[in-house]
Image (cartoon, rainbow, N blue to C red; front, side):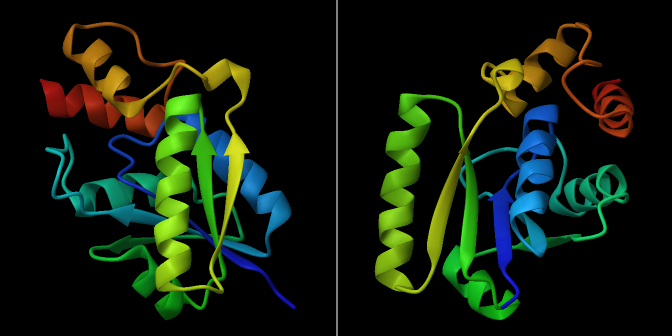
Length: 159
């Protein structure tokens, strides 16, 4: 049986921490859907179409990855994509608490949907998209935190 996983997030921007989770998920599952969420609770630097395009560009070399946009419930996307697994990266206890709450609600809405937590590689434990945006806004070097195409897009957006 082929296993399909969804890795959801706002990816504003996609970071090397996200890439690490995607690379590892690609080894565990036959296909990985990177689901770029339209977040109504956040004010993103990039609109959803830009985030999807940047993710597609950064992930072009991954044969078993597709990038989609979505709005609404993650369980609806999982059903649409015929995915049975959600992948979430966990950096800290606070992430774990939030993510277990989300996993529990998703399980109530779709009992057959499993959530798999991948702990963040120690190189990226302190990394977040918010911090990348803040560093870039203050003219700091973000090249070690994001893929090259993302770095260029962030710098161009902030000019």
